[in-house]
Image 1 (cartoon, chains in turn blue, cyan):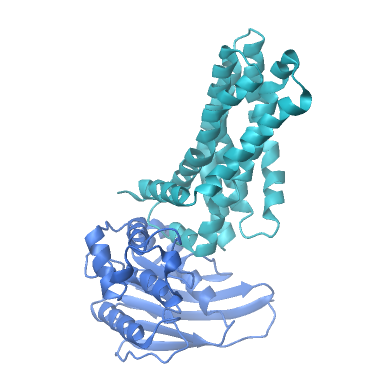
Image 2 (spheres, chains in turn red, yellow):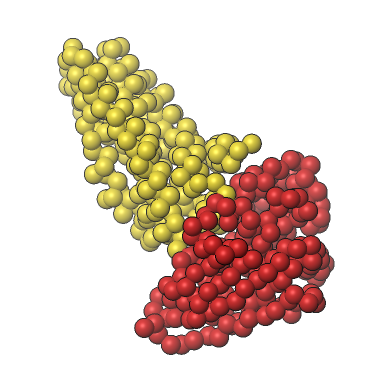
Length: 216
Length: 221
């Protein structure tokens, strides 16, 4: 279970949010909404442990993530708004490296299946440089399909604007992936400006307000 | 495959596909070293005397030139975030990156330096000592440089800042490295100098990946 306890985030001289608390339990999906600049990405980065909050802490199964580090990282899959792909490498190589780096033994077969699932199997052997923006996003998102159902698969997905640049078919597919993950006991936190086509009991929404108030 | 060897393999593959970057460093080194005999004139004694210094300074500048590429692309495309979030201690991944970086930018300098030394009419003994001092010294340059590169990540005008941060720490390596070659040229033993470079290699191997990992986390914050 992921818990955020009275988080406060300051970027530059602006307080983005203060006293923000929530928890995400297995089979729950948190949809973060809010205007541009309201701190959605900063919140996601705090939840990952990339950014440290000014106050408050993030806990995983009751322990602060700053003390868990690698143990927490093994449970987490983060896809930021950068795709984390290398232009010179092929889609397949990118995915294999991404999977290995995340500590999941990744065979070429498994990577190909994951690419197929996201509909970019045909581009597997093309350098990412030659792919379109939407295809790159799909290759990046293929990490979600990698090793799904495995026991060492990530339990918590943190996705920053996963639907950006995707076409209607890919959006539907990604929603299906997220749904499958959450209903099989996973957790997910995501931001998006599009209306979510997922309707499940465990879904809840937090709206971040854009605050003009300067930091104290 | 472990994440450690995965990073080394990835960076070598990337370097292979972006070969021009690798050649830049090497060509810079060759040009700088080769211009000196042309500029100073063909007086053998003078050339022999200045060879160790020239080659070491050129190696130092060449390896500094390659530094800004160490983390900058990973930072820009988001791979660095994934490395920080990997379930593997970050300093291990940093060591992997530095090893790959050295294989691509440091090792070629070590291999080509003895050939360039011939232009300066260096005796065989001195050439061997120079290769030894470079093979011990260039990894130190990469390790120390990694700290500077990590600290200046995402900073505008980072290139100049890296030079200012890193150069003072490079000086001891330069002094002992060139000193080893000078000593062997003068008929003395180069052992003391080489041992001192070895000691700085051991020290930077322990401290620098740790410091680099800290700096990377700060840069991403």
